[in-house]
Length: 460
Image (cartoon, rainbow, N blue to C red; front, side):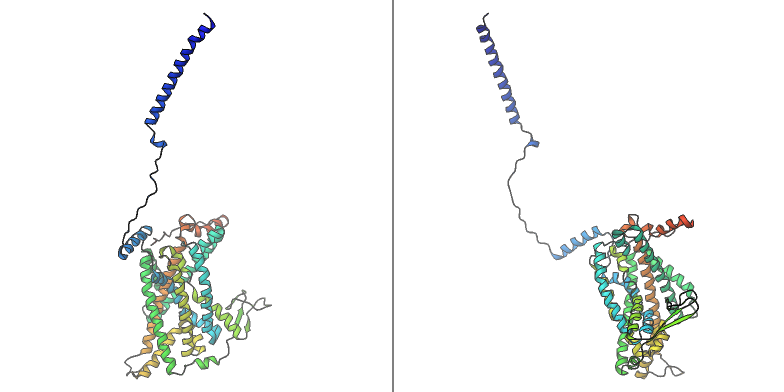
Protein backbone atom coordinates (compact mmCIF):
# COMPACT_ATOMS: atom_id res chain seq x y z
CA UNK A 1 0.00 0.00 0.00
CA UNK A 2 1.33 3.39 -0.89
CA UNK A 3 1.90 6.25 1.45
CA UNK A 4 -0.88 8.35 -0.08
CA UNK A 5 -3.41 5.55 0.40
CA UNK A 6 -2.49 5.16 4.08
CA UNK A 7 -2.91 8.90 4.64
CA UNK A 8 -6.38 8.82 3.14
CA UNK A 9 -7.44 6.01 5.54
CA UNK A 10 -6.13 7.72 8.74
CA UNK A 11 -7.64 11.14 8.04
CA UNK A 12 -11.32 10.08 8.31
CA UNK A 13 -10.61 8.30 11.57
CA UNK A 14 -9.10 11.47 13.04
CA UNK A 15 -12.05 13.50 11.84
CA UNK A 16 -14.52 11.05 13.40
CA UNK A 17 -12.59 11.03 16.70
CA UNK A 18 -12.40 14.81 16.80
CA UNK A 19 -16.10 15.16 16.08
CA UNK A 20 -16.94 12.64 18.79
CA UNK A 21 -14.82 14.50 21.34
CA UNK A 22 -16.45 17.80 20.42
CA UNK A 23 -19.88 16.21 20.76
CA UNK A 24 -19.09 14.82 24.23
CA UNK A 25 -17.62 18.12 25.40
CA UNK A 26 -20.65 19.96 24.07
CA UNK A 27 -23.03 17.60 25.82
CA UNK A 28 -21.06 17.90 29.07
CA UNK A 29 -21.10 21.65 28.80
CA UNK A 30 -24.81 21.58 28.11
CA UNK A 31 -25.39 19.32 31.09
CA UNK A 32 -23.40 21.60 33.38
CA UNK A 33 -25.19 24.68 32.18
CA UNK A 34 -28.59 23.09 32.58
CA UNK A 35 -28.01 22.18 36.26
CA UNK A 36 -25.92 24.94 37.87
CA UNK A 37 -24.69 24.59 41.45
CA UNK A 38 -26.35 26.99 43.84
CA UNK A 39 -23.26 27.25 46.03
CA UNK A 40 -21.21 28.80 43.27
CA UNK A 41 -23.71 31.43 42.16
CA UNK A 42 -25.43 34.28 44.05
CA UNK A 43 -28.24 36.25 42.45
CA UNK A 44 -28.37 39.84 43.82
CA UNK A 45 -31.97 41.00 43.93
CA UNK A 46 -31.03 44.66 44.03
CA UNK A 47 -31.21 47.36 46.72
CA UNK A 48 -34.52 47.68 48.47
CA UNK A 49 -36.11 49.62 51.32
CA UNK A 50 -38.53 48.90 54.14
CA UNK A 51 -40.18 51.62 56.14
CA UNK A 52 -42.46 50.99 59.08
CA UNK A 53 -43.40 53.52 61.74
CA UNK A 54 -43.91 52.10 65.24
CA UNK A 55 -45.35 54.18 68.05
CA UNK A 56 -44.37 53.09 71.56
CA UNK A 57 -45.69 54.91 74.58
CA UNK A 58 -43.34 56.00 77.36
CA UNK A 59 -44.65 53.41 79.82
CA UNK A 60 -43.92 50.51 77.50
CA UNK A 61 -40.49 51.91 76.66
CA UNK A 62 -39.64 52.32 80.35
CA UNK A 63 -40.84 48.79 81.03
CA UNK A 64 -38.63 47.40 78.27
CA UNK A 65 -35.64 49.36 79.55
CA UNK A 66 -36.26 48.09 83.07
CA UNK A 67 -36.48 44.52 81.81
CA UNK A 68 -33.19 44.90 79.92
CA UNK A 69 -31.50 46.43 82.95
CA UNK A 70 -32.83 43.64 85.18
CA UNK A 71 -31.35 41.08 82.81
CA UNK A 72 -27.99 42.80 82.92
CA UNK A 73 -28.14 43.27 86.71
CA UNK A 74 -30.12 40.41 88.28
CA UNK A 75 -29.94 42.02 91.76
CA UNK A 76 -31.65 45.30 92.59
CA UNK A 77 -29.19 48.19 92.40
CA UNK A 78 -28.78 50.94 94.99
CA UNK A 79 -30.10 54.43 94.35
CA UNK A 80 -28.44 57.72 95.37
CA UNK A 81 -29.99 57.94 98.85
CA UNK A 82 -29.34 54.32 99.75
CA UNK A 83 -25.75 54.35 98.52
CA UNK A 84 -25.02 57.71 100.16
CA UNK A 85 -26.49 56.63 103.50
CA UNK A 86 -24.05 53.73 103.90
CA UNK A 87 -20.96 55.92 103.66
CA UNK A 88 -22.72 59.02 105.01
CA UNK A 89 -23.19 57.49 108.46
CA UNK A 90 -19.44 57.24 108.86
CA UNK A 91 -18.56 60.71 107.64
CA UNK A 92 -21.47 62.44 109.43
CA UNK A 93 -20.81 60.73 112.76
CA UNK A 94 -17.39 62.41 112.91
CA UNK A 95 -18.94 65.55 114.40
CA UNK A 96 -19.27 63.77 117.77
CA UNK A 97 -15.51 63.48 118.24
CA UNK A 98 -13.89 65.96 115.82
CA UNK A 99 -15.45 69.22 117.06
CA UNK A 100 -13.64 69.30 120.39
CA UNK A 101 -10.42 67.94 118.91
CA UNK A 102 -10.18 70.63 116.23
CA UNK A 103 -11.15 73.36 118.70
CA UNK A 104 -8.36 72.30 121.06
CA UNK A 105 -5.81 73.02 118.31
CA UNK A 106 -7.46 75.84 116.35
CA UNK A 107 -9.50 77.62 119.01
CA UNK A 108 -11.87 80.15 117.48
CA UNK A 109 -10.60 79.27 113.98
CA UNK A 110 -12.10 75.77 114.13
CA UNK A 111 -14.97 76.59 111.71
CA UNK A 112 -12.44 77.91 109.19
CA UNK A 113 -10.40 74.70 109.50
CA UNK A 114 -13.50 72.64 108.73
CA UNK A 115 -14.13 74.81 105.66
CA UNK A 116 -10.57 74.17 104.49
CA UNK A 117 -11.12 70.44 104.89
CA UNK A 118 -14.28 70.71 102.81
CA UNK A 119 -12.37 72.55 100.07
CA UNK A 120 -9.69 69.85 99.93
CA UNK A 121 -12.40 67.22 99.84
CA UNK A 122 -13.97 69.02 96.88
CA UNK A 123 -10.69 68.84 94.95
CA UNK A 124 -10.17 65.22 95.93
CA UNK A 125 -13.71 64.35 94.89
CA UNK A 126 -13.02 65.19 91.25
CA UNK A 127 -9.80 63.14 91.09
CA UNK A 128 -11.20 60.18 92.99
CA UNK A 129 -14.41 60.13 91.00
CA UNK A 130 -12.54 60.13 87.68
CA UNK A 131 -10.20 57.35 88.79
CA UNK A 132 -12.90 55.04 90.16
CA UNK A 133 -15.33 55.50 87.27
CA UNK A 134 -12.53 54.53 84.86
CA UNK A 135 -12.43 51.11 86.56
CA UNK A 136 -15.89 50.70 88.18
CA UNK A 137 -15.06 47.58 90.19
CA UNK A 138 -15.45 46.93 93.91
CA UNK A 139 -12.24 47.32 95.85
CA UNK A 140 -11.49 51.04 95.68
CA UNK A 141 -7.79 51.69 96.20
CA UNK A 142 -6.89 48.03 95.74
CA UNK A 143 -8.55 47.94 92.31
CA UNK A 144 -6.66 51.04 91.20
CA UNK A 145 -3.30 49.82 92.41
CA UNK A 146 -3.67 46.29 91.06
CA UNK A 147 -4.17 47.82 87.60
CA UNK A 148 -1.42 50.43 87.85
CA UNK A 149 1.27 48.80 90.02
CA UNK A 150 2.39 45.43 91.31
CA UNK A 151 0.24 43.02 93.24
CA UNK A 152 2.45 43.37 96.32
CA UNK A 153 1.80 47.12 96.51
CA UNK A 154 -1.93 46.62 95.97
CA UNK A 155 -2.10 43.88 98.60
CA UNK A 156 -0.29 46.05 101.15
CA UNK A 157 -2.67 48.96 100.50
CA UNK A 158 -5.66 46.65 100.81
CA UNK A 159 -4.37 45.27 104.12
CA UNK A 160 -4.02 48.80 105.48
CA UNK A 161 -7.55 49.60 104.30
CA UNK A 162 -8.95 46.51 106.00
CA UNK A 163 -7.12 47.34 109.23
CA UNK A 164 -8.51 50.89 109.07
CA UNK A 165 -12.04 49.55 108.65
CA UNK A 166 -11.56 47.15 111.56
CA UNK A 167 -10.35 49.99 113.78
CA UNK A 168 -13.26 52.17 112.65
CA UNK A 169 -15.78 49.45 113.46
CA UNK A 170 -14.39 48.67 116.91
CA UNK A 171 -13.90 52.29 117.96
CA UNK A 172 -17.37 53.25 116.69
CA UNK A 173 -18.97 50.34 118.54
CA UNK A 174 -17.23 51.18 121.82
CA UNK A 175 -17.96 54.91 121.50
CA UNK A 176 -21.61 54.24 120.69
CA UNK A 177 -21.93 52.04 123.77
CA UNK A 178 -20.27 54.73 125.89
CA UNK A 179 -22.96 57.20 124.82
CA UNK A 180 -25.61 54.61 125.61
CA UNK A 181 -23.99 53.94 128.99
CA UNK A 182 -24.27 57.66 129.80
CA UNK A 183 -28.04 57.40 129.36
CA UNK A 184 -28.50 53.97 130.98
CA UNK A 185 -25.57 53.55 133.37
CA UNK A 186 -27.11 50.69 135.35
CA UNK A 187 -28.15 48.56 132.38
CA UNK A 188 -25.27 48.83 129.92
CA UNK A 189 -21.95 47.03 130.18
CA UNK A 190 -19.76 48.67 127.56
CA UNK A 191 -17.56 45.68 126.51
CA UNK A 192 -20.49 43.26 126.31
CA UNK A 193 -22.70 45.76 124.51
CA UNK A 194 -19.93 46.55 121.99
CA UNK A 195 -19.49 42.84 121.16
CA UNK A 196 -23.25 42.43 120.73
CA UNK A 197 -23.38 45.48 118.47
CA UNK A 198 -20.58 44.11 116.28
CA UNK A 199 -22.33 40.75 116.03
CA UNK A 200 -25.67 42.39 115.19
CA UNK A 201 -24.35 44.38 112.27
CA UNK A 202 -22.33 41.42 111.02
CA UNK A 203 -25.64 39.56 110.79
CA UNK A 204 -27.30 42.51 109.02
CA UNK A 205 -24.54 42.71 106.42
CA UNK A 206 -24.76 38.94 105.97
CA UNK A 207 -28.40 39.36 104.94
CA UNK A 208 -27.28 41.34 101.89
CA UNK A 209 -26.26 44.86 100.91
CA UNK A 210 -29.80 45.86 99.94
CA UNK A 211 -31.13 45.23 103.45
CA UNK A 212 -28.07 46.95 104.93
CA UNK A 213 -28.74 50.02 102.79
CA UNK A 214 -32.31 50.23 104.11
CA UNK A 215 -31.08 50.20 107.72
CA UNK A 216 -28.38 52.76 106.92
CA UNK A 217 -30.88 55.09 105.25
CA UNK A 218 -33.09 55.13 108.35
CA UNK A 219 -30.09 55.80 110.61
CA UNK A 220 -28.78 58.59 108.38
CA UNK A 221 -32.22 60.21 108.15
CA UNK A 222 -32.59 60.34 111.95
CA UNK A 223 -29.11 61.80 112.34
CA UNK A 224 -29.61 64.50 109.71
CA UNK A 225 -32.91 65.52 111.32
CA UNK A 226 -31.17 65.80 114.70
CA UNK A 227 -28.40 68.00 113.30
CA UNK A 228 -30.91 70.24 111.51
CA UNK A 229 -32.88 70.62 114.76
CA UNK A 230 -29.74 71.59 116.67
CA UNK A 231 -28.77 74.17 114.05
CA UNK A 232 -32.28 75.66 113.96
CA UNK A 233 -32.42 75.90 117.76
CA UNK A 234 -28.90 77.34 117.74
CA UNK A 235 -29.95 80.07 115.30
CA UNK A 236 -32.76 81.10 117.67
CA UNK A 237 -30.36 81.00 120.61
CA UNK A 238 -27.84 83.25 118.83
CA UNK A 239 -30.48 85.80 117.79
CA UNK A 240 -31.90 86.16 121.30
CA UNK A 241 -28.57 86.11 123.19
CA UNK A 242 -26.49 88.65 121.28
CA UNK A 243 -24.24 86.03 119.66
CA UNK A 244 -23.76 84.24 122.98
CA UNK A 245 -20.13 83.42 123.82
CA UNK A 246 -18.82 84.14 120.32
CA UNK A 247 -17.51 87.72 120.94
CA UNK A 248 -15.63 86.61 124.05
CA UNK A 249 -14.19 83.56 122.29
CA UNK A 250 -12.98 85.64 119.35
CA UNK A 251 -10.98 87.82 121.78
CA UNK A 252 -9.11 84.82 123.23
CA UNK A 253 -5.50 84.17 122.17
CA UNK A 254 -4.77 81.25 119.91
CA UNK A 255 -4.06 78.00 121.78
CA UNK A 256 -0.45 76.94 122.07
CA UNK A 257 0.60 73.51 120.82
CA UNK A 258 2.43 71.22 123.22
CA UNK A 259 4.81 68.69 121.69
CA UNK A 260 5.70 66.09 124.29
CA UNK A 261 8.37 63.38 124.26
CA UNK A 262 9.04 60.64 126.80
CA UNK A 263 11.56 57.90 127.46
CA UNK A 264 10.29 55.82 124.56
CA UNK A 265 10.70 58.63 122.11
CA UNK A 266 7.02 59.41 121.72
CA UNK A 267 4.31 61.10 123.62
CA UNK A 268 1.01 62.74 123.49
CA UNK A 269 1.92 64.79 120.46
CA UNK A 270 3.79 62.00 118.74
CA UNK A 271 6.84 64.26 118.21
CA UNK A 272 10.00 65.14 120.10
CA UNK A 273 11.81 68.39 120.48
CA UNK A 274 15.13 68.96 118.80
CA UNK A 275 18.10 67.61 120.72
CA UNK A 276 16.11 65.35 123.05
CA UNK A 277 17.67 62.02 123.94
CA UNK A 278 15.48 60.65 126.72
CA UNK A 279 13.39 61.60 129.70
CA UNK A 280 10.19 63.61 129.76
CA UNK A 281 10.61 66.74 127.71
CA UNK A 282 8.11 69.30 126.53
CA UNK A 283 8.33 71.71 123.68
CA UNK A 284 5.54 74.28 123.56
CA UNK A 285 4.90 76.12 120.33
CA UNK A 286 3.38 79.54 120.93
CA UNK A 287 -0.08 79.89 119.50
CA UNK A 288 -0.56 81.86 116.32
CA UNK A 289 -2.94 81.96 113.41
CA UNK A 290 -0.66 79.69 111.38
CA UNK A 291 -0.31 77.01 114.07
CA UNK A 292 -4.07 77.12 114.61
CA UNK A 293 -4.79 76.61 110.92
CA UNK A 294 -2.11 73.94 110.43
CA UNK A 295 -2.88 71.73 113.42
CA UNK A 296 -6.61 72.40 113.22
CA UNK A 297 -6.67 71.38 109.56
CA UNK A 298 -4.70 68.20 110.32
CA UNK A 299 -7.15 67.28 113.08
CA UNK A 300 -10.12 68.13 110.85
CA UNK A 301 -8.97 65.59 108.25
CA UNK A 302 -9.88 62.89 110.80
CA UNK A 303 -13.47 64.01 110.49
CA UNK A 304 -13.82 62.93 106.85
CA UNK A 305 -13.06 59.25 107.31
CA UNK A 306 -15.43 57.13 105.27
CA UNK A 307 -15.38 59.30 102.15
CA UNK A 308 -13.77 56.50 100.13
CA UNK A 309 -16.21 53.81 101.28
CA UNK A 310 -18.61 54.32 98.39
CA UNK A 311 -16.10 52.81 95.95
CA UNK A 312 -16.16 49.52 97.86
CA UNK A 313 -19.66 48.70 96.56
CA UNK A 314 -19.76 50.60 93.25
CA UNK A 315 -20.87 47.45 91.39
CA UNK A 316 -24.08 47.45 93.47
CA UNK A 317 -24.94 51.05 92.53
CA UNK A 318 -26.99 52.24 89.60
CA UNK A 319 -25.14 54.01 86.77
CA UNK A 320 -24.11 57.53 87.78
CA UNK A 321 -24.85 57.03 91.49
CA UNK A 322 -21.22 56.86 92.60
CA UNK A 323 -20.46 60.46 91.63
CA UNK A 324 -23.62 61.57 93.41
CA UNK A 325 -22.52 59.86 96.63
CA UNK A 326 -19.22 61.75 96.54
CA UNK A 327 -21.07 65.00 95.89
CA UNK A 328 -23.55 64.50 98.74
CA UNK A 329 -20.84 63.59 101.25
CA UNK A 330 -18.67 66.54 100.30
CA UNK A 331 -21.60 68.93 100.61
CA UNK A 332 -22.58 67.47 103.98
CA UNK A 333 -19.05 67.98 105.30
CA UNK A 334 -18.97 71.58 104.04
CA UNK A 335 -22.34 72.41 105.64
CA UNK A 336 -22.68 70.52 108.93
CA UNK A 337 -19.15 70.48 110.36
CA UNK A 338 -18.40 74.24 110.06
CA UNK A 339 -21.87 75.22 111.29
CA UNK A 340 -21.77 72.84 114.25
CA UNK A 341 -18.29 74.07 115.15
CA UNK A 342 -19.52 77.68 114.99
CA UNK A 343 -22.51 76.72 117.13
CA UNK A 344 -20.32 75.11 119.77
CA UNK A 345 -18.09 78.17 120.26
CA UNK A 346 -21.19 80.39 120.25
CA UNK A 347 -22.99 78.47 123.02
CA UNK A 348 -19.96 77.39 125.10
CA UNK A 349 -16.65 79.04 125.94
CA UNK A 350 -13.65 77.55 124.15
CA UNK A 351 -12.13 76.11 127.39
CA UNK A 352 -15.41 74.27 128.07
CA UNK A 353 -15.46 72.89 124.53
CA UNK A 354 -11.91 71.59 125.01
CA UNK A 355 -12.70 70.14 128.44
CA UNK A 356 -15.70 68.18 127.12
CA UNK A 357 -14.24 67.45 123.69
CA UNK A 358 -15.77 63.95 123.51
CA UNK A 359 -19.31 65.10 124.33
CA UNK A 360 -19.46 68.65 122.98
CA UNK A 361 -22.84 68.37 121.26
CA UNK A 362 -24.41 66.89 124.39
CA UNK A 363 -23.46 69.95 126.43
CA UNK A 364 -24.48 72.30 123.62
CA UNK A 365 -27.93 70.68 123.48
CA UNK A 366 -28.25 70.81 127.27
CA UNK A 367 -27.41 74.52 127.48
CA UNK A 368 -29.78 75.46 124.66
CA UNK A 369 -32.55 73.32 126.15
CA UNK A 370 -32.24 74.98 129.57
CA UNK A 371 -32.33 78.42 127.92
CA UNK A 372 -35.39 77.49 125.88
CA UNK A 373 -37.21 76.27 128.98
CA UNK A 374 -36.44 79.48 130.85
CA UNK A 375 -37.45 81.61 127.86
CA UNK A 376 -40.79 79.81 127.52
CA UNK A 377 -41.46 80.02 131.28
CA UNK A 378 -42.02 76.29 131.73
CA UNK A 379 -40.95 76.24 135.36
CA UNK A 380 -37.70 75.60 137.23
CA UNK A 381 -35.11 73.18 135.92
CA UNK A 382 -34.93 71.14 139.12
CA UNK A 383 -36.69 70.74 142.43
CA UNK A 384 -40.09 69.53 143.49
CA UNK A 385 -41.87 72.00 141.24
CA UNK A 386 -39.99 70.91 138.13
CA UNK A 387 -42.29 69.11 135.71
CA UNK A 388 -40.26 69.25 132.54
CA UNK A 389 -36.56 69.49 131.70
CA UNK A 390 -35.98 70.33 128.03
CA UNK A 391 -32.22 70.45 128.45
CA UNK A 392 -32.05 66.92 129.82
CA UNK A 393 -34.42 65.71 127.11
CA UNK A 394 -32.27 67.18 124.33
CA UNK A 395 -29.14 65.77 125.91
CA UNK A 396 -30.61 62.26 125.98
CA UNK A 397 -31.82 62.68 122.41
CA UNK A 398 -28.35 63.67 121.19
CA UNK A 399 -26.80 60.75 123.12
CA UNK A 400 -29.19 58.28 121.53
CA UNK A 401 -28.57 59.80 118.11
CA UNK A 402 -24.83 59.41 118.68
CA UNK A 403 -25.37 55.76 119.57
CA UNK A 404 -27.46 55.16 116.46
CA UNK A 405 -25.23 56.93 113.94
CA UNK A 406 -22.03 55.44 115.39
CA UNK A 407 -23.70 52.08 115.01
CA UNK A 408 -24.18 53.02 111.37
CA UNK A 409 -20.43 53.63 111.19
CA UNK A 410 -19.98 50.01 112.31
CA UNK A 411 -22.14 48.99 109.36
CA UNK A 412 -19.97 51.11 107.04
CA UNK A 413 -16.85 49.33 108.30
CA UNK A 414 -18.35 45.92 107.51
CA UNK A 415 -19.41 47.06 104.04
CA UNK A 416 -15.93 48.45 103.40
CA UNK A 417 -14.26 45.16 104.35
CA UNK A 418 -16.74 43.19 102.28
CA UNK A 419 -16.16 45.39 99.24
CA UNK A 420 -12.39 45.23 99.69
CA UNK A 421 -12.40 41.47 99.18
CA UNK A 422 -15.45 41.10 96.97
CA UNK A 423 -14.53 42.98 93.80
CA UNK A 424 -13.99 41.57 90.36
CA UNK A 425 -10.29 41.35 90.96
CA UNK A 426 -11.09 39.33 94.06
CA UNK A 427 -13.18 36.94 92.03
CA UNK A 428 -10.18 36.36 89.80
CA UNK A 429 -8.08 35.36 92.79
CA UNK A 430 -6.67 38.68 93.98
CA UNK A 431 -9.06 39.89 96.65
CA UNK A 432 -9.33 36.61 98.56
CA UNK A 433 -5.55 36.51 98.84
CA UNK A 434 -5.12 40.07 100.07
CA UNK A 435 -5.01 39.10 103.74
CA UNK A 436 -3.09 35.89 102.97
CA UNK A 437 -0.32 37.55 100.97
CA UNK A 438 1.65 38.97 103.89
CA UNK A 439 1.03 35.92 106.10
CA UNK A 440 2.36 33.58 103.43
CA UNK A 441 5.62 35.51 103.14
CA UNK A 442 5.98 35.96 106.89
CA UNK A 443 5.43 32.24 107.50
CA UNK A 444 8.77 31.51 105.82
CA UNK A 445 10.59 33.35 108.58
CA UNK A 446 8.23 33.19 111.57
CA UNK A 447 6.72 29.74 110.95
CA UNK A 448 3.20 31.08 111.12
CA UNK A 449 0.19 28.91 110.50
CA UNK A 450 -2.76 30.84 109.08
CA UNK A 451 -6.19 29.29 108.57
CA UNK A 452 -9.03 31.36 107.07
CA UNK A 453 -12.29 31.03 108.96
CA UNK A 454 -14.50 33.91 107.81
CA UNK A 455 -16.92 32.98 104.98
CA UNK A 456 -17.52 35.34 102.12
CA UNK A 457 -20.51 37.57 102.67
CA UNK A 458 -23.21 37.47 100.00
CA UNK A 459 -23.17 40.23 97.45
CA UNK A 460 -26.30 42.22 96.73
